Length: 167
Image 1: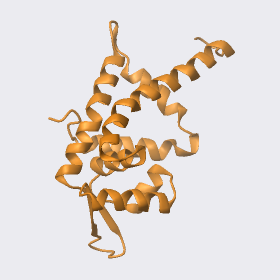
Image 2: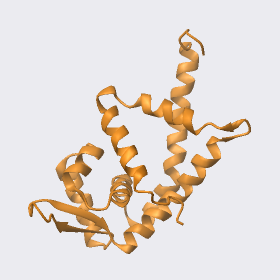
Image 3: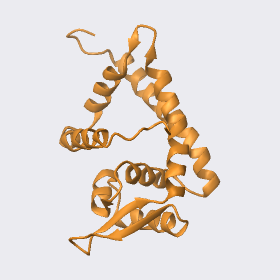
């Protein structure tokens, strides 16, 4: 790449590759979610609550950037069907802290499994792991105003030391 910018043709090809990669990345979980009558918003809630048990509804809203009403509907379904539960905060009783049930964690792992395999396959290049490069590229696609919060999330979630491959 050097110092010169990408040609428009190469840039458009990357845009299209990103579209197709995302389409296929979400296709496996979409199929599983359909069996439960759930959609991508349910998946995101399961993922982030599972990564940071005890997070507040407000923290989840900040991550997902969806309306309170949309999150409320999705949370209600996940709670009613036994995948998520909430507790009031110890110090602030108005806070609702979110946790996955055992069934919620099982579903989260089931949804993540094919995505983990897809990512590992993509970065296992013959000349060595390209994971750091992908991480850098994706990080810089995040809006500059959101990068610090995203970096903080990734750093904090990594410290949880949770195995992400089911074991």
